[in-house]
Amino acid sequence: MLIGRVLTDGRVNARVKWDLTDNLSLTNEPHMSHGMVNFDYKGKDYRSQFQMGNGTLFGASYIQSVTPHLSLAGEVFWAGQHRKSGLGYAARYETDKMVAAGQVASTGMVALSYVQKVSEKVSLASDFMYNYMTRDATASVGYDYILRQ
Image (spheres, helix red, strand yellow):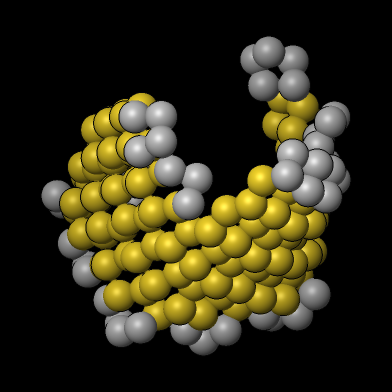
């Protein structure tokens, strides 16, 4: 599958996705100055991803369902060109009416999000991001209204 879009500032983004098997897919996201290849594998209750990009960028992530409602994840990356690496952990709790997620990374980022389903067509959401190294914080709230179902 080929997916693309043109942005208002003139940039063109493109993505190629190829499902090698029911569980394994290969994606490529070339950009003018950046190229990335993702290898995704999904099992019954887990998903893993390996990324390679130009500039000696490598990354891996893994998410596992621990219970029917709780999932735990971890990720690691190494950017050789910039000599940076990072490690992150995440948790997600989901019911039929809400989703709550949290993430913390060695880069200093802490992210929290919450989505509450109000009705079949309306959901309310909020998120909060804080970088404990730079002390930057952002928060947002929003809604999702489904016009057709």
